[in-house]
Image 1 (cartoon, rainbow, N blue to C red):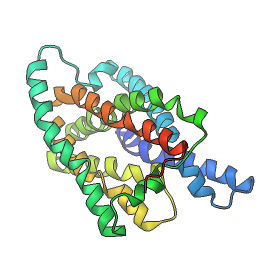
Image 2 (cartoon, rainbow, N blue to C red):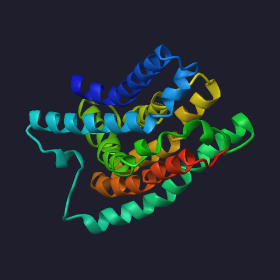
Image 3 (cartoon, rainbow, N blue to C red):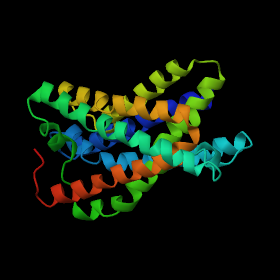
Image 4 (cartoon, helix red, strand yellow):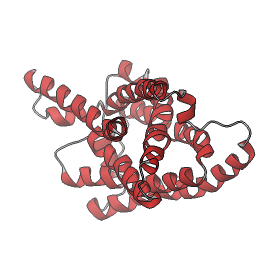
Length: 242
């Protein structure tokens, strides 16, 4: 269970540690708003954390006598039914991944676009290009498998109820976003922490009902996150988001 709690916490703790470490270095070098400047690099913190998660998932799987692919619930024989569940899940994902964040932003700032300018800040162009591959690929292989392929099944096996596991893991999955791009702005941090909560709970419910749909949801997740480096490149080239 120590490994389970580690994997539940690492995606919040490690990028936050990276963010604070970089901010400390920037402060030493004279950056006045070091925390905000450090938060601009959050896609790199996420990518590094993803790689660590994948390595840990592989190591822990071997320790249990399993393979990494077992964490993905990969199954060739159930693909027709899995696709059906995935298409059914897409309707909920389209609503749960976008609308709550927009509504929360309007409630906090009166504008659904304002916090995007805080989240996506310009970086040196050369620092953006590797993210086109590293970020979405590592994110697809790490985030949902860590929470729903590794942590959730083991919490269920320990005796926790289905709804407690979905609620706990879904809440941590949502709150992690605050630690990945934290700034000293309570409204922004609240927005980051809560904007993906409906999405996290919905995906958790789908994987709980149909575990073998996870590889297809990973593919959906890849497509969703592939747009982030594109936005970062546009912003780094001078395009405003808010």
